Image 1 (tube, rainbow, N blue to C red):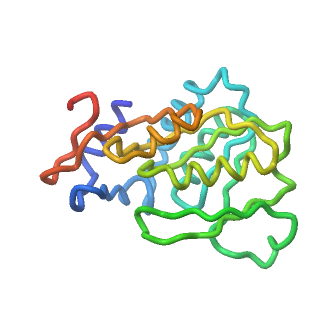
Image 2 (image 1 turned 120 degrees about the vertical axis):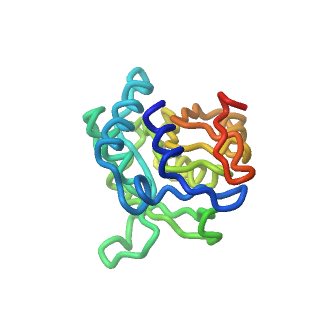
Length: 192
């Protein structure tokens, strides 16, 4: 997705050879025009997948997921990382390790929002090792739902997440695939 690649080049900040900071448009301040285009692109790519719900994890996945859900005309659910007084019973719970934050979170989703009739599209901002996507897939599968696919805004292809998810049988579709962050420079898979 050229618009997203251009934004990564213009505003992304490389922090070492493993981390890309995109807080000016994706995971702190958000560019609503870009998020609208991201949602439209995911909706186009998964138009034939029979998606009934979009599932993400708070908080950086919410913007691309809600825009995707809007384009698909389906509900969006976000897995909570933080305990809520109103979400204690009848929940699906899964542990997810965050590569960026270097911590494990228990994510929760209310059982009333996912069922065996659902075909779930998982949407997330980044894919590194696949932990968040696997955790969300496990939540969907706990409900008996099927995973229609996994949509990733930015994939770090030099980490194993996409390969591991594909080997597990999931359809992974990433809008931008980064081959390397070496020497402070973003290199996309198409350029490598």
